[in-house]
Amino acid sequence: MSEKLTITRPDDWHVHLRDGDMLKAVAPFTARQFGRALIMPNLDPPVRTVEQAMAYRGAILETVPDGTPFDPKMSLFLTDDTSEDEVRAAARCEHVLGFKWYPAGATTNSATGVTRASHIMGTLECMAENGVVLQIHGEVTDSHVDIFDREALFIEQVLVPIHREIPELRLVLEHITTTEGVDFVRDSNRNIAATITPQHLLYSRNEIFKGGIRPHLYCLPVLKRESHRLSVLQAAVSGNPSFFLGTDSAPHPRNHKESACGCAGIFSACTAIEFYAEIFEGMEHLDRLEDFSSHFGADFYGVDRSSQKAVLDKKPQEIPPSIECGHISLTPLMAGESLSWTFAGTR
Ligand code: DOR
Ligand code: ZN
Image (cartoon, rainbow, N blue to C red; front, side, top):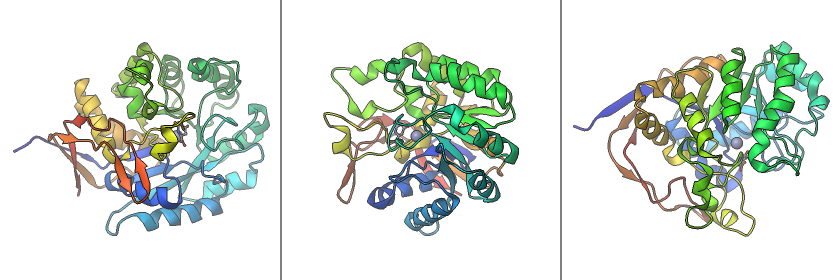
């Protein structure tokens, strides 16, 4: 009999499910593995209010196959104009778990994001008072700043001052990619956490240019040099509860990636938990996978850990070179490669 790993059913604390046909195509992959997921609001137009988020949540639930328990949690798109009433409404809604701060222009559909930290200080204070969590895309957007320095500069110039001014604000530095990100989270108080993606654990920036340009490894924040990858890897397997799973699975149709100006985003939802199992096993810390994937995020967000289990088999699988959903073609992370673990279901 093959080796099995049974863990508390995991949660994905950062995922893009999109809308329309793309939502129908990708949501079942996330719902199959994860009991809950925090759904990013960067639709066009963005999901800014509790009312819009509840409508979006309804649309997501319609795409989930019958009999698959899945609880989408929502993050609202923060703008310079987000009102304190909206913050209080979010605090009262059990399905909304925070606001996402995209610096304006930082990434996909973020043009109407926050233009300056000073414009939202009142809103952040209101969030702190009401116990609402802030999810942050932590990159400065000034065009003169080198793309590889954007996270470190955001931490130094924006995040450290905010944390000093409002230490009770609970925040998640999303998809961390740098030693500076790891150090900031590890050395801060328990109000600060970070999510970690599979791609930032698996690859350094060299991989984007291996033998030619590889658009399916382009995401934001962009992959960094090897020393940063190793810092993030050590943080993930460290057992520190401030670091937990968030795939940042961000699907774009293949022709939008394989283009003269390709979109940022990596689609990893179809074999998400297997990527992490492989990585933790490679680090000889498979015993710490469950805390990272299924406990620490729930604890940070103050929701119950899942009462369900997920089972993985030590059974090799091939990741398909392409996933076809109607007219949409998606290229998953590690397309055409093999994994040694296979998700076997929940119970
Ligand atoms: O690579 C990314 N893709 N990074 C983000 O921050 C957004 C995401 C998307 O929505 O496509
Ligand atoms: Zn994202």
